[in-house]
Amino acid sequence: MILPDRSATAISAWLLAEGAHLPDMGALVEGLALRLLAAEVPVARVASMVETLHPRFVGAMRVWEPGSDMRLRRVTFDDPVVVAPDAKYTIDELQKTGAPFEMRLDDPAVDEYDLLPALRDAGHTHYLLLPLRFRGDPLHGVSFSTKVPGGFTPAHRALLDAILPALNAVMNVQSVHRMWADVLRAYVGSEPADLILKGAIRRGDVRRIRAALLMSDLRGFTVLANAADPETTVAAINAYLDRVVPAVVSQGGEVLKFMGDGVLAIFPVSAARDAAAACAAALAAARQALAVEGPRLGMALHLGEAAYGNIGAGDRLDFTVIGRDVNLLARLEKLCGQTGEAIVLSDAFAAALGAPARALGTFELKGFPAPQPAFAPEG
Image (cartoon, rainbow, N blue to C red; front, side):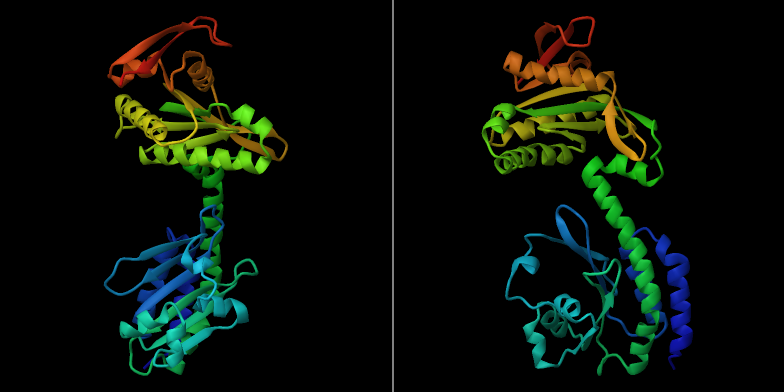
């Protein structure tokens, strides 16, 4: 016999005591599903549907089913779920009314929806979508479905309704944490974002990391920006970044900073990747970006130390990158135009790379007392 009050109390207590400290929303959904089964609520599928604050994704769905790994589906802004004007989705129904959406899957109206026919064909009998309210509109949702003949009973529904306040509170905490992490990573990069979330927000906090450094620049950008309207200029920058950023990420690097049409990225040296491997990854990323058709790029590569941290005044801070090696990298990048080379290497990078490099000579660089040697990769 189900005792809804007792089971709801136990599950709610678990949610409030432990749920907010789980590593992600997927772990929360899985933990909830297992506790519902222990409380004799016959869930065959539990899914969270949460809108996000992310430059690429409008929302994320995490789906638990017994015997399967947790599934994560991120919905992009150009996903058919978002752009199809005639589609009918359960989450839309919930957001229109603000009330739970419920359907027995033997109802002929199931065929009007995107998800429900597949659930019915998989043997599900009853679908319930409950609203979650985090920060006002839009509503988010958590759904439950079962394969038990006859569907959820009133007692099952009472238990799910009873745990909803605690579930809403904990999913709100998880969602807000993920939202801030996504926003910070979008603007400052993954490692700086993690540092900020851990409390590295005091002015003057600095972190040093040894890495292969890459700086990229769009040739002719000043002429373009002076001649074109802002929308055209932004579109050109984004098309250029679509060449550089995926190349950096695919080689295990991280973009630390966008500076107008400039990109600063790092390929950290670690126990798993020595200096030679980090330099090889940076060079591969540069070549990968240059292989994509588009405007001319100039790229400088250097092996050194990136120092990044908080600068600013009062309540306004910027998480930026500073130091001699970053300055040298910027000066080397300017040599691309002077030498006609698409990629310029520092002597430290060329020495660590362990591959043939062509000497370009020594150059007077602003801010450096002695001439600096520069190289270009062979091939």
